[in-house]
Image (cartoon, rainbow, N blue to C red; front, top):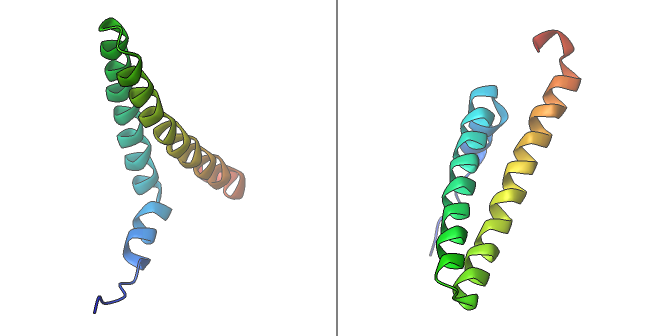
Length: 82
C-alpha cells in the first residue's frame, strides 16, 4: 500500500516569496522552451506536431498565471513588504 505523504513541506516552500519566485522562473523557462518547440513544429509544417506543442504550452501558461496571482495576492496582504 502506498503511504499518504504530507504536502506541508512543498506547500511551505511555495507559500514563501523565494518559492514563488522559483516557481515563476521555472514556469517562464518552460514556456520559453515550449514556444521554441511550437516554432520548430510550425517550421516542419506538421499540423499534428504543432497541435501537440500548442497543447503542451497551455498548462504552462496557466501555471505561470496562477503563480503571478499568488504573488499579487501577497503584495495586497503586505503592502509594506513590497
